[in-house]
Length: 475
Image (cartoon, rainbow, N blue to C red):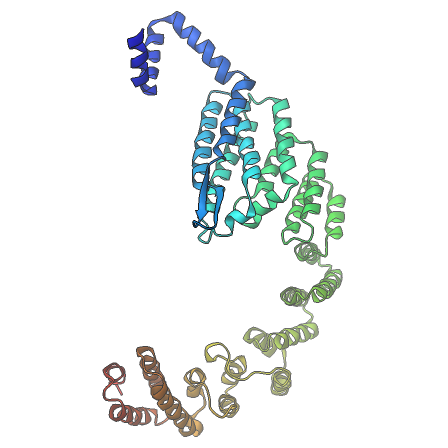
């Protein structure tokens, strides 16, 4: 007997499984007793087995680690160990589901979310700069979700257990925890709960759940999501009047107002749609949401285009053009709408309403682009030189469009800018920028000769800069 005890200490779980399997195969009586024992523990609705697994799941969230230094240290959850252990228990849930114990499998999945809520702290992500912790938690949430959804649809699932688990999930959904998961892009808990509720709740219970979620997310960026979910369900129940009432109730949410407006447009009720848009613009202005104001104006323009109202198209394109401090999109639309004999006067009156220094991002200017399109070379030259000393990016982009009459002045401007650049900045990037600008000089009248003369000056003045000499050797 003593020898057996020592041998059992040495034996692995694999050794014992092999022996039991072989012995049960040879001994029918032992086989039946083993099946009865295992069935009672793992297959039948054994509450002790469920509690054992749930206790293991809760225990997996007890792993911690110490962070900080010798003077200031803190004990925090070790999320890598927690998720690794939790994932192992979730896999046990898959095995239980495979043998028909859906109650235990679903209970394990729900216990994961209960334990996660108890352990999770928003501060745990404050130092998660690369998102690794959030990713680990999110992967475990998805694994638990898959197990839960498969379990509640299984034929062996008990109705009373489903109701109990749904209540636990409902309690979680009422806390800030579910919002935090979604807000940090970890996991959409509410969407999972929606799928569970469709299986376990009555229609009225689901609608009440949506009401609760809508109130919970009041004032948050995603409140409209829950309104949309409720509206979709009402429509599935053929309660279209209630769905429309819900949309009207929350029409101050831009996304919901857009749904209503799009519905009116599809019905060609343009007047009511425009009225709703104007209300939306007023709301957005009060909140200082200028991007939303612009979006509503674009939608209003879309309506006028669909209805063929050219006068209002011109007004709205003009408004959008001015609000964006110039736009080639609305320039082209307006040019197509305005009679040719009235176009120039209209355009310059419109341009007078916006300010532009001719040097936007990377030297690009909408007004300059319009002058190029209109072949207004004198106005383009004046814009480029409007600050006395033009910017190099503006010269590179627009000088070639100004014609021969202004080439000499622009070449002089290039020479002054590039000599100053070479004198102040001594690095490889500057040399490349100078050579690039000289290639643009060559596009102007007499530009190749001017670029060559400038290159000769640099070769004399900076002959001890081999990198620079290499960049300008082509001139």
